[in-house]
Length: 119
Image 1 (cartoon, rainbow, N blue to C red):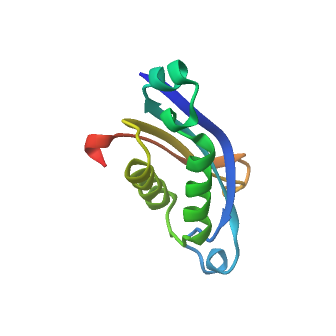
Image 2 (cartoon, rainbow, N blue to C red):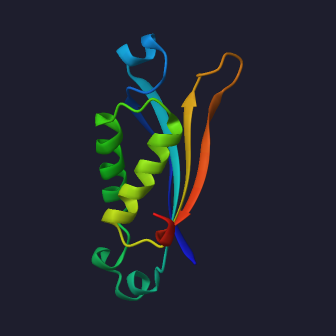
C-alpha cells in the first residue's frame, strides 16, 4: 500500500476537560498517513487522480478549529471518520498530540490506525 502523509499540522482549538481549558484555544498537532494507491496519479501526473493532501489538510484544519472535544481520543476518532467520508483512502494512521499538556513532557496524545471497514 502506498501512503500520502502530512506531518506536524498544528491547529488551535478548544480541547480539554478542565474549566480553564474550555475557555482558551490550545494547539493540537497531527501527523497523518493515508493509505491509497498512487499508480493512477503517477501515470497521469494529474491531481484529480491523487489524494490531494492540501485538501485533506484544509478539511481537517477546518473541522478541528470548529470542534470543542473534551478528549483527544474523541477528536482523533472523529477526524479519521471525516477523512474516510471525504477522501478515497483505505487506511489512516493518525498521531494526535497536545504539546505541553503535561508538565515536564514535550507532548502527550494518541496514535490510532483505522481501515475504511472500521470507520
